[in-house]
Image (cartoon, rainbow over all chains, first blue to last red):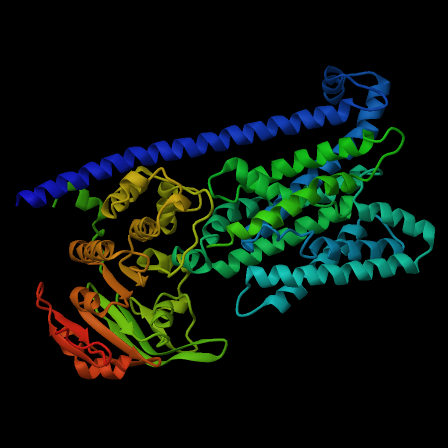
Length: 357
Length: 279
């Protein structure tokens, strides 16, 4: 009898200890998340202020705030509201869209390489957008539609090719890389078949550029991000469970197939509208998710944080793109490519160590 | 019963039945399990054994709705399991697959807490009841002192106990486990099976598991199910089932069956043509 009593006492003690540790673990995790999120917001706000004040005409941060709230002089109103703000708005919205799209694809395919610019979704969107721009010869609201059709076509084809009674992440990524090459070829075909002046404009766009960004580019991205926000929140928790494996997730009541399809659908739409607005800006989608994850450090997908990282990354990269060369602006995609290339090399070099499940 | 037991105890609801009616299971059109009928006794420990590739893990997946039958049906609580939502199944039935993946950076406490997911609504997150249940699961599996560690830092044995803790936190009425003793040394194997037997005794949870070790299977099973080539070879109490004839048929193994000196359960001793009694 004493032994059972002792065991009961010990079990009770263990449970109390576990309860206390659980509270500490949760507090630590949430406070780190909070600190990271606040830090990212601060960086994003600082990037915005910098983007608005730096330029041929320097507007002090105070003046920026004044102008944005309805005050300020005519010159700063013109410079900020007509030139810098629309460009910044495109940067931020595109950053959010790419950041979310990348994090979703990476989570759902359990592969840090699985970002829309690697697996052909961005290339598909480019083909669609360029087809509308060059072949049909129209611009405006049809460009995002064309991008969406192109991105969906590549993703759909990829799903069909990679389908084996379900989607395996590895196969999807490999098929996607192949499809990205096919889409790039089609893109190059379009460019060589059109007259050089139109192709020149398209080339800048293809490098990923916000040089001629207007509010017209911004609104579709904003609308899509806002509309998909509930889906993002719905996915955030489920994707975390899905990362434990389809079977574990199903056993916990998460429909793996439905979650995966919703995530791929959201990712395709986000990547497509972002590509339509700013071109296939390289690597933002690839980098944002892993950076956010590493900052949060708790094994959750961290989708909101990925959106914040994408936002800051786009704003800062575009700032560099405008002023890094003395006389000329470079497309933002070139700056992000310079940052992203080494990251990809690092990822491939260290990736094999994390392959063990 | 102490206060600790009431937390883990069922809410009085009955343990649902789990029945396979002529179930066939296949991967990519290749049939693994053929028209199998099986009635899992509610509230008992059923152990599925059989040689490699006999379809025992596949059968477990079929019973747990992870694999859709391409013939016949599985009924949980007299309802066709494929017509139930993932969540409705998850509230009643838990399944621990052979190789679950721990996301990088997740802590033990956080992972085990994920077992509460099917019981939580869209907006209701962790309640203090959830915390109590998670703490109980950690204590029951001897992982209470690991709660703040990262899962990737743990040994294979510790990790396995953490996954079991997650399945316990789910508080399923039927718990399916696919080779839960893999990665565990012999001491932890016995501890784990004791834990599952205890859970079964205390709460009436139906336990169905695939085991490789026949002697542990005989010791812990109320019912043994023996499979061969995707079909049921025989089932019954370990005493009825674990015979030299069955071992020959199921595994092609010549073996003696003696009494387990500790429990009196049947125990098999393989006969090897290479090794003979030492002089």
